[in-house]
Image (tube, rainbow, N blue to C red; front, side, top):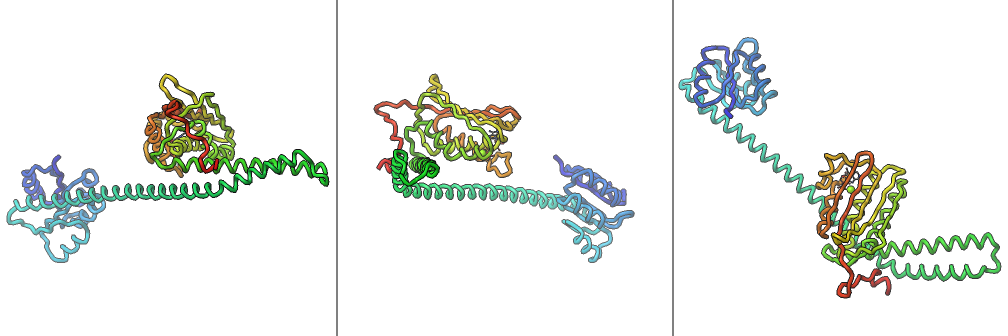
Length: 402
Ligand SMILES: Nc1ncnc2c1ncn2[C@@H]1O[C@H](COP(=O)(O)OP(=O)(O)O)[C@@H](O)[C@H]1O
Ligand SMILES: [Mg+2]
């Protein structure tokens, strides 16, 4: 497209001559007869170059120059004046983006074409630089975001290592606590100490019951942590029981549902779906999906986790259905994009990582949703049959049974 140039001069003859000269180079030329007329035209059109006289009735060239700074900050301005004093020139340069200051009459009018071409060159270079700068800035922002993400991942893996260490240390004392608590409970239940009355005795039995339950729960958490730590090398895959992975995930997420007054229903198939998988990566998948379901579901809602074996395809489906806010159809495609989030505190990474892990395991993930009704996220994972060559992994980590 031809570049647009505005010529501003109160002398009609001069306007005509200048316009004719510049049209020879194929520019599109508009003319204005004074400052006000020029400003009117600058509001309508994006001129690349403005060629202006200084002394004009109504509004002079300085007015044009300073208006251009506001309206067309990228325009190059060439001043063509018959009143060339140093003071005038200084005023013009102060007022705006002057490329050249020329004195009338021009000895050779053709010189104008050269000057306009150079002005355009400078303008394009500046626009190009600006574009490069913006690209650079964008690349920098992305890089920074990536590095923040990596730092976060590093932190998480450090926390994981720490948790595994703590779990390992707690394992032996906890085994003792569970064992002794059970012995005390058995002894007390079988015979009431002679010097205790009924109320005291019953209170004690209830306390010891709580103690045993608490110790069991602590031991379960520790063994879940150990299982998690054992398989946290990303490439490590073992045969895992999908139901066990789900139970482990509930261990860490169930309190969220409780706290928000959401009922959690588990409907597991009677079969035992075994998958060749990285258990902690799978746990990450279901943690993300459960947390999304919880965040979308208001108090009083229900989240149902259902497993269904698909023998034809040789795999198992996990359906996580909520009675939450739902997802509008136009957003269904976008929720798997990295950084796509509608939550104020969201990262938008949950589902993109989730899909990646599911696909790493040869599976797929589907979402059905209806606004204000709820959402169902379904994960399909291929199962591996357990055989003699393929014995199931011992459920408890070695350190626990030792
Ligand atoms: N069960 C769900 N119900 C409604 N919206 C959901 C559900 N799961 C995911 N979404 C939508 O998908 C978006 C992306 O989810 P996700 O990738 O986990 O990132 P985040 O949870 O950080 O926003 C969420 O912000 C939310 O808008
Ligand atoms: Mg999420």
